[in-house]
Length: 461
Image 1 (spheres, one colour):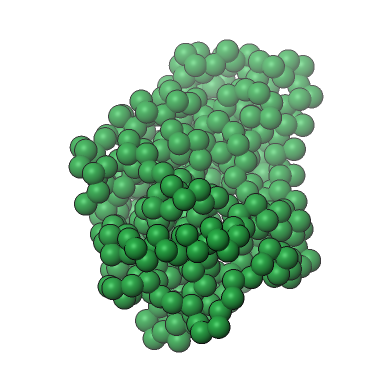
Image 2: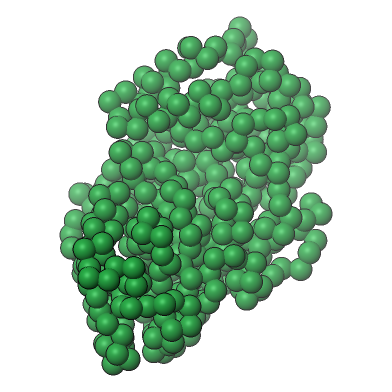
């Protein structure tokens, strides 16, 4: 156990105090009636602008509007997105929100209110940031950790990226509404929560190479680590029946996701709770992955990404004595060759230029890569012990995901097994956030690992 695991596990209230943007989180029956008081306490509201979709307006939006009207708070405007097709976090929708507020008679005094699940929240969060004001969040499902997170995951010019923007000042989550959300949203939230395990493993890897000046590597912040990692398995156990509508499990899941969001607020980035598993998801989101014409949820894509990233991690650390070796005759690609490979992998994509730029920024010369390899080999057993002490074994991970009604095979989200495995190549290219895929690539063993993964009778089956 690492030293930063030895501190006591902070409570939800402790994590809220550690966050520097959110001031209040209400999660109890009847909390919607306190929304007028929240607006008075934390916002100088001359009115509100309500944003929802047709589903979440019925689930919560109409009731919230009634409460606001009864309290005499002006409804300056409202935007309700259609229920079909399913809403995407596309930047064009952010422009619709900012445009709708900007044309109001007194836009500076209007508070945006997000009433919905993760996509609605991300859209309003970024729109509020661009308008230089704070917003209020009314979550309707325990589906993502983004409600309380710094930043919004947005598809901009074909590139899924986390745009900088503050979390809401206040949130009001009604347990009854959360419990009545469709089961696939709760299983999506569970998958997102389970992904924090492999994300923690990758933070350990990142921490190990950061002293070498590796681009995209981050040291572990003990206080932020303890907000999420030590209590994670306990929350997973308590929330495993969320998709079955168990009220206590749904609340446990929401609290756990809120805590992970608070950790991102404190860190001002997603490193504490996001790694390669989210990069798999981002690739599929840019590909507009759908099943029978219905877009796959973020959490379900992350679930398959978590299984894939966990498999890669197990395969990398399979040998207790030494890391895998590159194939005979392997020569690390130069910058020009690497740039051409990345360009080819994203040919025709709207995000092509941004990914190529990222690849250039994260590329290290052979001397630096050799130092990484030497350091990993010299400290391999210690690094392996630290990672595997955190990693949930693949079969155990698969077992708890099955209990939580999460997808287990790529085919269940519209991918072939080979397509899911091949995604690792593009996932490794697209972010400057050091993790297991980067380590494998820098040591020249990514392709052998993917070959072993392809041949396996266990992984992603």
